[in-house]
Length: 175
Picture 1 (cartoon, rainbow, N blue to C red):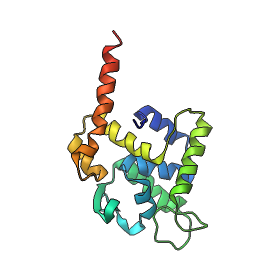
Picture 2: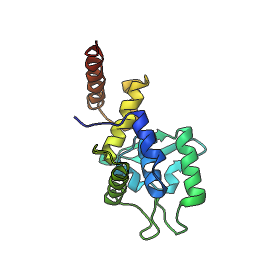
Picture 3: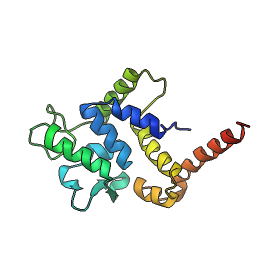
């Protein structure tokens, strides 16, 4: 089963990240989008007036993902202060290529986890998994999580229920 990070671990990862690593982790965690979706995001896909991002997911399916207040602050700051001053249509970019790749994002996250000295495997996908699991832990319905993740079937989203069931077993074993 895929391991997820709890809210405290995610905050620790974010607090110790800087620059492009921080932006990538923030967007993945606060939106729940896939890494390939992040790499394809264009600046025009983000609508700050409606607080939403247009995402092109698996099978070229389009979905709308709401932008949280935290993510909006992060993105506005990035666009105004940190995004390289180059001509590119992509939201997240490096000065060299004008975009980011999945491989580069994975390397940045791996390096950050190593700096923290964690023994956990933290990937782009388990940051997405952490988004869903932490929403579920905080009482968000499985159907809402399904829509946010862009799953066509609720069965795909139900994997997050197994995590909570494992936690319940751990809880009764405390006695």
